[in-house]
Amino acid sequence: NNIGPTFSWCKSQALRLNCLVACGYVEKTLENNNLYNSMMIISPEGQLVYNTRKTFLYETDKTWATAGDGFGSWYCPWLERQISFGICMDINPNDFIAPWEAYEFATSVLENKSSLILFSSAWNDHNPEETSNSAMPTIQYWANRLLPIIDSLQSKKDGENCYFICSNRTGIERGTSFVGGSCVLELKSPSLLAKAGRFDEVVLLATLQ
Image (cartoon, rainbow, N blue to C red):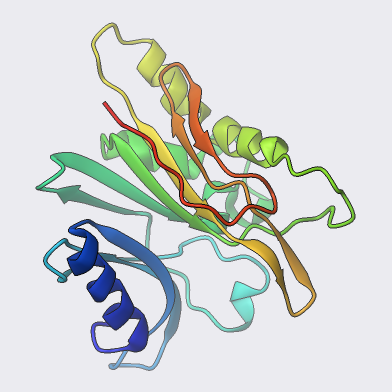
């Protein structure tokens, strides 16, 4: 995962912009040829510093991917933040069978004491005939899945906070529509700091405290 075209592109962008780059990709392991739905994290120096694998597989993932062994979390030394990582289905109840109130992903964020969540997604648009550009129903769903984090933050009187940064796919590929709605959420209030519509291909800018 540090010699392929995706890594090369991420490295070039990290060096060009002097920033962290997080990017989803298909990971193939050398030891057993397993495939994973993964996300690579590249440092501003162009180094692979972390790799996380999707743990809760969607029905299409199950046709090719191996599940990861748990939600990823990593301390970023230059941001001085603990970061939790999620990929699409990870935020849902496991297999849509687990109880809603299990909040598996949100619980992991709390256990790791993360103040930043990076969420990469290709969320299906189940109403492709809808012409409204608003992605708020999807954004509200994600926020609802993070409710234990919101409740925990609101119970504290200090300045502790947590931010949810989501990059979600938009458009159509091979007949499948994606719902867009990339966003930045501040979870203590909670409030929406930046958002894209269902059909928007944009760069979002937000300042985190």
